[in-house]
Image 1 (cartoon, rainbow, N blue to C red):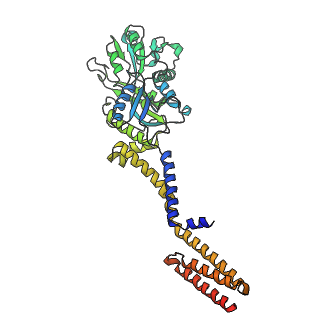
Image 2: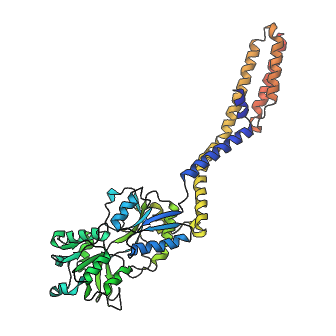
Image 3: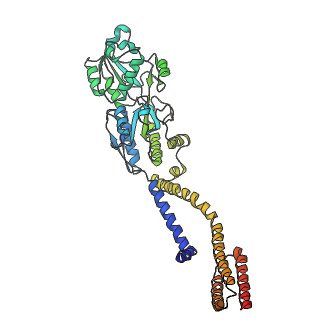
Length: 432
């Protein structure tokens, strides 16, 4: 107990204890606020699609900041959601088609931003609908040979919804679930009458449709009706020749309906990666300008999954001060340090305000202990056998009190105690 008291009033021991606590708390917070990973994986789609192309461009952008991005080939949106929601898959991010996901099945996923429009392109052979003046409404597909997308793709999911809304079932059509390249081959050979494909206007896969003789592109005359019934769809105007001036496709101004391709991540995504990915996306999307207006994407509107709070701040205010003025990893480490120091200040600054009160409490405790000893001496003052012991104990008390270190604010209590010691000495001499 005496050893504990000795260290309790030792400034060096107190300082060492404080630094030990500070270091421990700092270390714990350092572990709880980890840096972003240097290697991440993104589920994309077919190598011929824009999802994959976007992933490859994102990979090049992130490499400049020391982040390795692996782009995974998949069957499309459904596969991407399955992989992203599986913690064993190793997938950190994915591009998904808007309106496909059942959000309730993926409670741990969040949106970073909408990236670009993905129109529903319905290509058809002109000869298959010549008597009807071309394909104008989806109801005309009844009894036709139609590819509605491969298993695991967003095209398949959205095609089924559009057919259902249009009063058709899969049994009303001669449906095939083909990958884009397979569908193009069959459309070219006359084995299909129409093909659904959901991709951005910049996707290279669309160029393969241009070379098919007698190919036409459906004009969604009921676009407004579809967007009112399916709010995640947007009506997008496609001017004549936008896809190919050389092939004059489309051959007239048309309108299509389009979900939004969204960059989705796990809820635990590092805020620093959110900032980096969105910053890189801005640069990439400058070249995706055929259908969207300049600056329209990345966007926080019309998303299936909740928008990540850091993404919302970025889309509204841009990059943080640190990421705006410092290299990525420098900003990351400075940001981590700030996130750790602020909680420490919140914890320790109030503690500092209690130091004077604690110091005063311990001083009073020491003084009270001395007064208890003085009371014991006075109680034994009338016993002549204890005279020498009492005087000797009093000298010990006086030396101890004289060695006490007190501040100017506590000097009065210290001098009062010394005065009381003198009074006890006088009483001891008087009774002897």
